[in-house]
Image: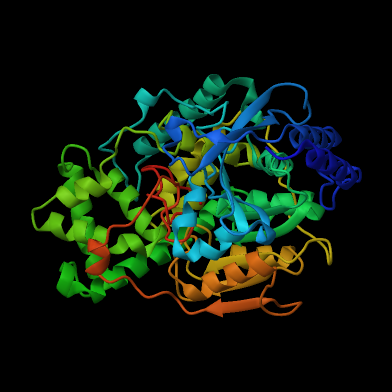
Length: 560
């Protein structure tokens, strides 16, 4: 626990910084602004008592855990408070070189980063972990916090096999509408009146309270995917509290995009990435025998889908499970060789690899144990609460029927994932206009892969336009979702230089740099290589999921 003298000093600094409403916060209710101030001052005084991590976190003894308590409702900071589990490994280098805490969020919404301190073991993080305490945490509502969101009885979670039609019938649509209504009502019933307080603005406020509890006068933060969105909200609300920020695989922050339009854009981008995968498989036809062109590979895939619809593999893997497994190949090419192998062997009469990779498992979806549907529940609550959504299915049907003609791979699954938001009864937030003026925010670093499907590249460009003085590093002709700490040494060089020195590439007004793509997967070595993994919602080889096993089957959308 840090000294109370330091916390007292930090409390006065917080008071000074929030006495005037921060730039860009005109839409924030005054009561919540004052509530954030109150909560941060209290957290600075209380600090975090780090000790052994809960057994459910399954973390080694080198990682220490504690709890930070935040208001459920920032308009009532003296009311109900919820505990967020925080994990930490202290900086390994000399005390004189310590630069504070580096806080990480991997996205979702619905993902915990309590595993994040384990990156200290990875070579790409050696110098960073020498200078920084590595800090992860379970955001509000996520398993591992004291108030996890729940939307359905775990026993009701579909375990497969399930269909995944690319041209759904009217009967199928009506069935999914009924499911969406039931799920939305389940969120309200099982989570209760507090459901309205799970949204991105509160996630940003929680980050401010966590900063104060850690004893940091300013925040050094790294967010991936969805973590970039509420990180950008933080930068807009509390720019004077920012020390350094890294945004990896950014969400498009325009309020008009949140979240319905962003999901339409995501479905279109996944079609391109799906074609990238099939083109790569065709290049290695001698290994897989699935076709010498992308179209031939697609026909092989459709043959597998049709056979699984008629006879699920192992009684568990139907078209829905196949699609969920293949979706991960759109997130990261580390999955390309295993997925191509599974398709190839299935068509040769061996379904075992496909069953191993695609069969649903009734186990917790995230670090910390608990409800296996928690990640989906938090995802739904945050995205539905964040912004208005079309409330007439006819709008969804019109937009996505058109889109599916161009992008059939993910379009309808994305609809079914997000459709509960059409029937959401909880009051919705007005999206904040992410934006900072000249000299308000220190330079921040944005990292993006040019062919990222989950968060299309235009989002990175838009975020740079909105955060004055920010720098954008692009991995060209690559599509892994989350590239920090991954296989690209050029990207990692920019990341390390920024975190250790604050330096960003380029000069204002255009601060940009590009990196050549990391090598394409090798169809043999990747298949045989055993990778160290721990739970996360992101399947990339960057820190967003270098330790991650991928998204939970059946949950996609804008999740990071």
